[in-house]
Image (cartoon, rainbow, N blue to C red; front, side, top):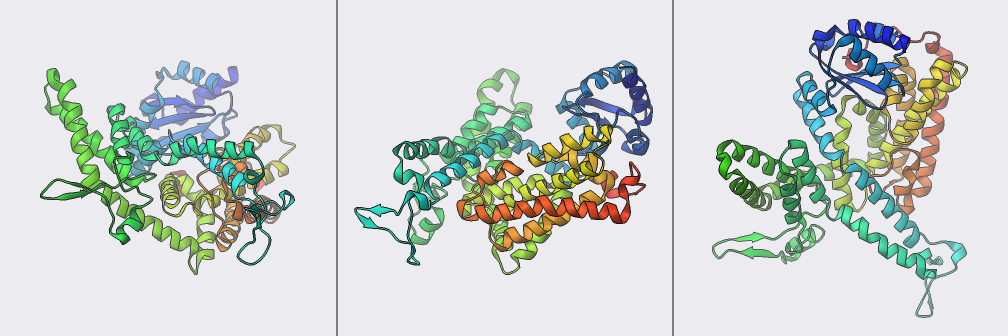
Length: 504
């Protein structure tokens, strides 16, 4: 504790004093500051403190990595600084003034998706498990027969049974698991609109109701049938006499749901300012929800559908076109830098659009591979410094979290600090991405973004994904060792590199 008190006192001074702190809180391993003037923080001196394992700036917050003892450090910091405890939301709000317009937009996107990502991951695992049960022919289960007739593949080879073909129990499990799978993906707009209202601080039950209107069975043409129904001219509609309105659902759609949720929230905020408080309970929900539903089905839904279609078509072309190998190499290399800027949160929306339109995404497998690659680079740093107990406190947990899909401790605590491991991770991820897009590796949904990610991969892509995983595991490790041999970057605990883009 005495060491914490000394370091806490020094941190207060190095960060610019109490008057430079708008708000401060902590998470599981990091102190999180919203600073009045971030340029006053002496980053190099802060990182030289014995209790500090690294620092970085993200989403307008200056974050100091302490480790598992961060709660004790935080108490000492409060004692020496006299700064009161703030909630994470208060720190985020205070930090917004340090963000650009683009950063604020990406932060908003991240905060919308963060509460629903666990459900999406579960859905991806469920779909992956169902694919293994029902779509993977296994030779040891024997040839498939239908009504006594032996079945063959189109190329004449034997078609073997799947697990559900030979086991009623697993067939029942397969059908039952569609219940939560459908709830997660089919009704995704409900979760998105709810999350938007939660983020905006407006009435969440109204968001749930609005989300349900986007996926209701009363919408006689579902999102899945829209394209074919348009071609066949069989779109269902509401007839108002002098005009008709297409009754189209937005199942699994992301952008229409976000736009609808924002419209509802801004309408509610507006009416709460205008309507007298005595009438607020009655009029505000009505005046917010009904116009939002109308806007969602007349303007915002079609616009959101079109934007989503453009984005997904462009990304799809990159993933499957003539130069897909180049797209994979570039995306694989630069996903980790996107994480640093916060722009990576946009990929959640793109993945969801690809899944809704094409029943799978080739983008998410590269994200998982990038996380694995950065983890392997940290693993190499651990190997090179394995006799340094102090360093092990950073590298070991960073490697584990990275392999499980959480990259920030690895990126900011190790790889960017020494730079060369970060570049090695980018190289390994680039090669893995090139292979992934060349062989059209596809996942059913967003999964766990690390080693367990194979569970979300479609059966036909599983073998090549394991090849890509091997590349992401081995190449960064070897390249990091090579870089250290050539440049001796670990001879100094922190390189004297001035990288404004990373440090600002």
